[in-house]
Image (cartoon, rainbow, N blue to C red; front, side, top):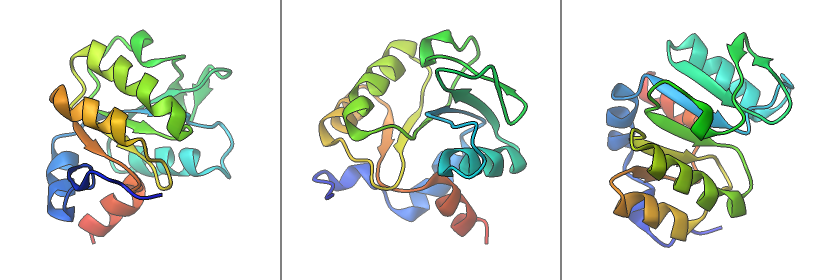
Length: 143
């Protein structure tokens, strides 16, 4: 899957700035299954001091954190939305992030690309990153 808009896959130096300005991360599709990538990434981000807000349809608690059904249900400020859902859902998540008005970055995980949605995020003042893993990039920055 190719990203047609290079700006969405920012230089690695900009990833540091994104992480430095992020305290709260909503993880869309955060699985309760500890063998799943979304759960491993969430656990890592928590271990690094980020506040993680899992979004998942069926659980109440994941990794000791209250679970939300969607972005709209979160009552605290959200700096980053980290997406672990299929590419066709990214547009809906971006629309929710735009409506919130407080999201600074929308990040879709490895293999997840939706150029139109990411373009819309950028046009609405939200930094967009796609097809990268937040855990991997954070670990590389903090080596």
